[in-house]
Length: 342
Image 1 (cartoon, rainbow, N blue to C red):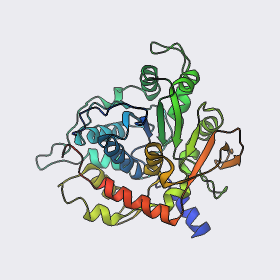
Image 2 (image 1 turned 90 degrees about the vertical axis):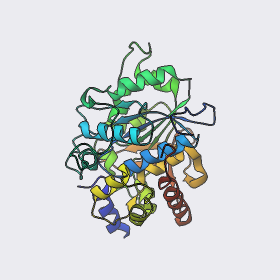
Image 3 (image 1 turned 90 degrees about the horizontal axis):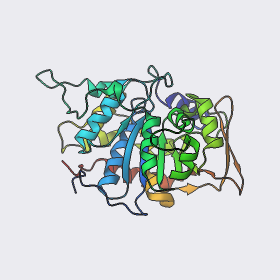
């Protein structure tokens, strides 16, 4: 079963400088931790590519990539990406005992990990080795957040809420005397999610339904503003399979291209659910229409319901046809560009 895609069917029926150089820190360059279920849907891989490109352009500081998909393949795939793009120092956090999602889609992360060269050796270089013993994401969050300026970190969550709820539940430790919720309130500026659907209460979006209890808490209790890039937005802005086939001739093998090819039979277009969340986090509302502030409630079935409220601090994004086209054009131009180290 494809990540988010069984909900896409329902929706369709219903509507038919090498970047080893640190980026200078400033108030205009957001510090971002990317939280992803990479390996479930290929748009996560596109979002990671976009993160490196934004970092290379001096538009963001990528503090870490935290994974909420079980297994060693997602972490090894992220390590391949970090190494290939020239960012081997980027910390990687993992999850154990997370949501059961291994049979939901073809695990393209594992497909790329398993690619061999003519000698039978791994094709793509790695920088790490012991993927099962990387730091658990909640601990990595605490380590990073405790070292940052107050109200400075943006978390972009394009997967399940499991790691985030576990972060809120942490207690004081060697990194901070604050518990998780207080640490988030002090250090995090805002949370940007790919989650929910706000134009159809009967559509239960994948990232929400894979851990409904966590999603309920995050939308209700997360102590900073939350902005969601929802299901319906990503469906409107689809990355073209033709670009995957035609726009990467500058390299013999590209890990994101190989992931895209492994995920579904080519050619196919894929919604940009996750890249749109990162785009908003970095470049703001110039590409989007942002809802008024309000509250978001998650039902027991996984619906996400928005209620406008001047005292609330939850919002969601939407796009019209022109905005969607502009976003896709921007993604194609950015994602197909050579990384700084190539």
